[in-house]
Image (cartoon, rainbow, N blue to C red):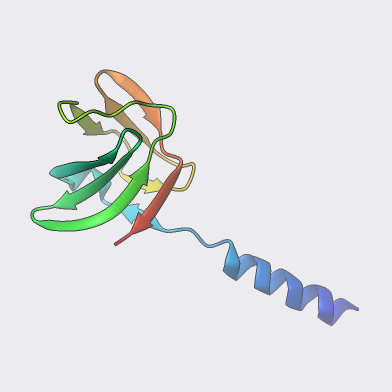
Length: 92
């Protein structure tokens, strides 16, 4: 029984791993995917897709990454003078 529990715990821990974007403040470009999703880039290289469901993003928005590390439910981005919580991050 203990072995089965240990195996299940290992499977869950590997499945729950999230993408993290380190050195996020160095991202110098972004592009809008939809009204709640952006792609962060360094130079011409896209690095991550970031979902911000509680903030509206339009093509003329101003954006500043406030957290140096972005992950699922971890990190903040300033969009049009509103602090937005990151919902999900997927590395590209």
